[in-house]
Structure formats: structure tokens, C-alpha cells
Length: 345
Image (cartoon, rainbow, N blue to C red; front, side):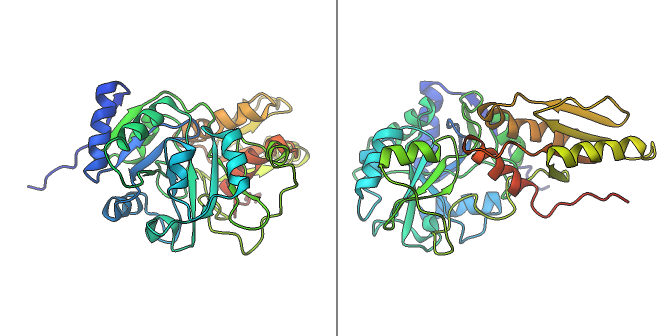
């Protein structure tokens, strides 16, 4: 009789459970790690076999680089071939916190971590549980210690912001998932490339472009074709299994009028808005979120996961405002809805 796989185990983060998690990391196993952005699927970044388990569990392409999480900016420098002045200024301003820096990699960094590139992504998370794990993990070894921790979900799907989300993503993985509560930010870190002549944002997040420019005292360069590959930059990403669309406000209102005139046999749809409340109608659920970028960042992934489980025919999101504080939300929604179109027949 085939042996049944053991399910994940969620443990409230305590000194004892953190110790168990660190023991698993040192043994080359995976854990579910809370951070302030999203939950990560974490492994020893210096252990090739452990890193391979991340790719296998997530179904992640081998050339898609990982971000190394460390306990401090000082620890981060051990993973870099050089530490530019821009990296120092940004680390001083935003670490610990939801920012990843792309720098030239040190010789010891695994190709599996960098996707074969000559750069590596580094982050110092601020979540107290992540900090406790990282400090304990690096406390008894002289080699540079860090944890590779991409979002703890199947590749391309909606990122997890609670321990329960992680367990749902990997029901057949005997993971220890540390429960650190709902992620405070809710979207992945801002990724800033400082490996070249002029810094540039490769993925928007809670650390805004305007704040970065103020710290650096110079404008950011535009991302271009020669930029390093980074996590979450594929055209289609962060996507629910349910067909999901993003429509401008005027187009959405027109579409709602068309739904009202359609046959009653149409599937039930769900609309997420920020600027208006649609008139009630059959086979339509409406969720209105506050017109505030940080609220959307915090709520978006958990809401998409919930609505995905409720099995609507289509999810339709009102396009958020086009202003800098909304860059992260717009980025995630563009990728989540990439290639989707509405069947209006």
C-alpha cells in the first residue's frame, strides 16, 4: 500500500517552533516563512539540493532567479561582489523592509539562485519571525548564510499572505509553516537594480519610486531589455485560476449594462471596484475596496484567493488609478489578467 504524503503543519511562531524551523533549514528541508510582504517557501540559499526542492515544489522554471533573505545589510554584503554607494544609501533608508537590491554576485552564490546570471537579489525582511529565523540560522556558521524564499505558491499563481494559504498551496508537502499572522504589506518587495551605472526599479512595491529617488538624489533609469531577470517579472503572473479581467471604469460600467440585458443563464460574476457601487443585479457579486493603494496591496491577494475558491464565472477588477502610489497594484493586476479577454457573445 502506497504511503500517504504528510500534509503541512502550521505552528504559531514561538522560540521553540523557530528553533524547529531552523533545524529543518539546516537539514536541507523547506519551510513556510512569514515576511511583511508575502509568505515565502524558504530553503538554505547555500545548499544546492535544498534550493532544487524550491523549484520542484513550486514548478518554477530553472532560469527564474530567487531572492536571498538575510538578517542585516552587513550580512547582505557577503553575497555581493561589490557594494555600490547606491546600495548603501538604499539599505540604510529601507532595510529592514520590503525592498530587494540587485547587485553583482559574489563567487560563492549558486547559479541556481541567480538563474545563471552574474547578479543576485538580496533582501532584509522586517517581519520579526523572519528576523528570528534568519538570525538563528546564521548564528553557528562562518560561511555566508541566507535563505532563498520566493513566494510560497505554485509558480504563477496568487501569492500567499497567511500561513493557511501556504498549507493550501502545498497539501502534499510535509512543510513546517510558521504562522506570523497576515502579511502586513501584502505584495512582494520593490526590486531595485543597482548593478549598473544608474539604479532602476524592476518590480514596484511598497517602497515607492519617488522615495527611492529622494534617497539617491537622482532620477531612476527606465527598465529596459538588458535588465537582469527578476522574480515576478513575467508577463503572466500572480494569476487566479478563475478568468480575471481588468476594465477601465467607463468600460466596466458599459459591461455591467450589457450583463443586465443578458440572459439569466449567464454565469455568476464578481466585480471588484474602488470608485462606484454598481446597481444590484442577479448573478453579480460586488466587492468595493477603499480607494487607497495600501488597502488594495493588503487586501488584493487574500481577496483573489477567496473569490477563486467561490468559483465565479469571471472576476472583473476596476482599473486602479494611474498614479505612482498605485504602481505595485497595477503591476500585479496587469500580470494577473494578462491574455484574458471577455467573451461578450
